[in-house]
Structure formats: structure tokens, C-alpha cells
Length: 341
Ligand code: UDP
Image 1 (tube, protein in one colour):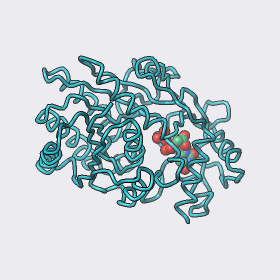
Image 2 (cartoon, rainbow, N blue to C red; image 1 turned 45 degrees about the vertical axis):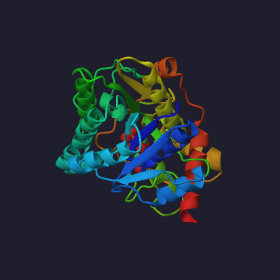
Image 3 (cartoon, helix red, strand yellow; image 1 turned 180 degrees about the horizontal axis):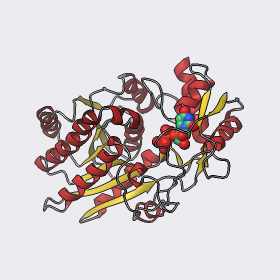
Image 4 (cartoon, rainbow, N blue to C red; image 1 turned 90 degrees about the horizontal axis):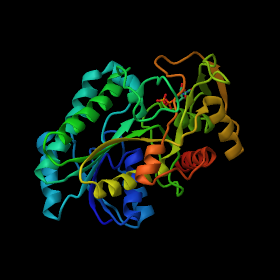
């Protein structure tokens, strides 16, 4: 598979790891990022891993004319065979405070990307979605046929809306082939510790907060509630190593290349649920380091338990996870230590 692929948000957490897997698969990634929630240090890390720096277009995907101009420049050097669209704001809490910021950015970017795809005859699009589209599912593990309830946050609504926009465009006559990838909880980092998750502010997600708390950069971890109806009372999620997630994007592109028409959603998770306390224990087993933590009140809006039925991705994409929770947490800790060095 030798495709030239635009990776919007390619300097971000999942995007940068996907750039590596694209190169490993023989593709040429072109990073498109405005570095609004990432730094150019990521490019140094990518250079260290790949031995070269990928091509970068610094552009805001929500800026229609700038985005179309960037596509023109890229098209001068050859065909644009695919687009993986990661670029989006992703902080659930912030989206409730600043909904217009989320709607303007996440939705406009997706519309602009599709318009650019049409202008350049690009038919393969992979979209970065989230299991948040399911809310609190009625049954777990959750599969792709589960209903989408009314979104709990503006962020969640942008994922539902963008999936719908892509689906509508694929049904409109333009021969778009799309994979809507619904991520569960990505954690960990590349084994080199040259790239990883880089929360620029206070981390909201469990694992980046946990590693910063262990590194004593933050107060002890607060476990948000231990009175949920789960075996140990803490919430359950499906934590997936970011390199496993990255590989799924390559598998999705490969799959799109073999389809004549397609607009399909895929769950990307391990299929296993782990509670917050289990994550703490797994971290301690994997690293030998104790996690300072205390039990606190519930966090508003948290779903009790969700994990993936990822059998569709295994069946259709031939993809499944290789890394364990311990390995992912070990890589997250190695990355945290590299950051502190
Ligand atoms: N969590 C926690 N303390 C934290 C951050 C998260 O106990 O400081 C819990 C949170 O309540 C949830 C799980 O860890 O049960 C995963 O949270 P995260 O924000 O990483 O992912 P999401 O809730 O979006 O799936």
C-alpha cells in the first residue's frame, strides 16, 4: 500500500503515532496541523523515530480558504490518495463552557476536508470518532449497531454530527468511501518514548493525570467516585494502546482501498473493561511504582461502564490489539519519565 495520505492533526497524540504506522506500511503521510494543541517538538520526535521529518503543512483546517490552498500545494506534487481526519478540539469539559468554539472548529474542519477531498478526487477518508457517541450504552460490550442517544456534551455532539455529515456526503453521489473509527480510551506512547501524549494544560484524562501525579508534578490522583454499580465501585473503560489504535488506521485505509462503496463505523477497543482501581493496580504491577491516590466524589457526566465489542474491526479490517494494559501503562510511564528528563 503506497498511498499519499493527508493526516490532519498529525502532530497530535493519536495522529503522530499514526504517522509512524503509515510510514511503516509504505505510505507517505503529509501532516496538516495548526499546532493549536500540540508543539513542534513532536516533529523532532517523529524525526528521531523515522529518520526523517514528514512533510508538514501548517494550516487551520477550519479556515476554508487556507485549507483549500494547502490541498492545492500538496496536489502539485502528486495525487492525494487518502485523508485521515484527526484535527479537532477534544476537551469534553471545555466544550460545555465554549460550545461555539467546538462547533465552529470541529464541524467546519470536517466540512472543509470533504470539500477539499471532492476538489482533488480523493475518495478515501478515515474519520476520528469516539465511543462517546454511544453515551451510556444499554448493553456492554457495545457494538456499532447500538443507538446513539442525545449527546451529553457539545464535544460528543460534534462527533455524532461529523459522522452524519460524512455519511450524508457519501450518500450524495460523490464516490466517497469512509471509515468512522470510534475510539475507546487511548493510552500509552511509542516504545521509543520520543513521542507520546502531551497534555499542554491540566490533564483531564486518567492516565496522563496518573503519570503526572506519580511524577509528583500534580496532587495525588483523585478517583472520581467509588459508589458506581461496578464490582469495585469505580467506573469501567476500555483502555487501548495508542500504537494498536494507530495500526487500525492503516488497516482501515487498506480496507477502504478494497471497497467500491463504503461508509462504515468501527469500534476500536480491546474488548476488555478495566476499572479505575484496576488501572492503578496494573500501573503498580507494570512499573513497581506506587500511585498516590484518594477517593473523591463522582465527576459530572461520567458514564458508569463502557467497553467495546470490536469484533467488526477484527472481522472486516483484520485488526486486533497486541498490547496489554500493563504494557500500555509501562509505555505511558516511560514517556512521562522521558518528558521529565
Ligand atoms: N478518572 C479519575 N480521575 C481522574 C481522571 C479520570 O478517576 O483524574 C476516571 C474517570 O472518572 C473515568 C476514567 O477515569 O471513569 C477515565 O476517564 P477519562 O477522562 O480518561 O476518559 P473518559 O471518561 O472520557 O472515558
